[in-house]
Image (cartoon, rainbow, N blue to C red; front, side, top):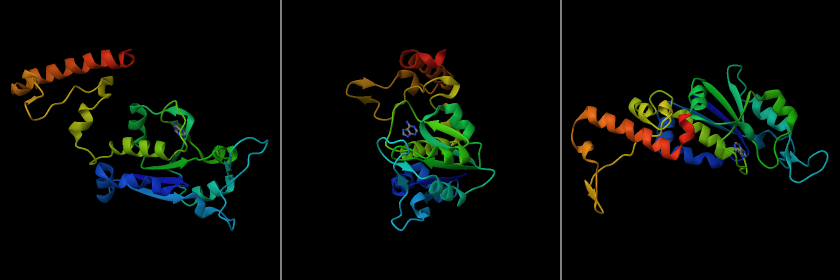
Length: 220
Ligand code: ADE
């Protein structure tokens, strides 16, 4: 799966070189191509933004510069996603759906936003990662890349995907590892019983219980 990221701050994405996503990149399961929007400025000062028509605070990213950055990666089979608090809030079902694409182009805004005309021209879908405002779309783009990449074949083992939180709309059961006793607290007996049926039953009950307490909205 390929991600092209249009951003003014490509170095923010360095953390994707670590851990599971880093390994997936190394193994060629996913490709993350960072495109610096500033490289497409025709201005001798490499200007990428300007003051808003009509006045007001902050700066607006210029449509021509963003458009040229887009043209450098354009692919009629790719979906273009703009990360914005105005978008549809990202949920696990959406993550799974996005993972079916071969190529996503992620557009990250900064400052007061991007000229509406280029958004109207190139964006297929707007996505938000939650009802709060960040300084730019870079962290949301990383959230999207991380969550979607987990569904790319080979990135995780199949079992982790089946058993994770939100599968069947339930949260995950609690996990334990050695030592068997920690600060006076023992690992639940059933987990050391070796009785697989009972373990599975206990885990299902725990998932249901935890979801009822922490996220009752998921059960509706
Ligand atoms: N840009 C700024 N805040 C955002 C959010 N919550 N989701 C997506 N993009 C954003």
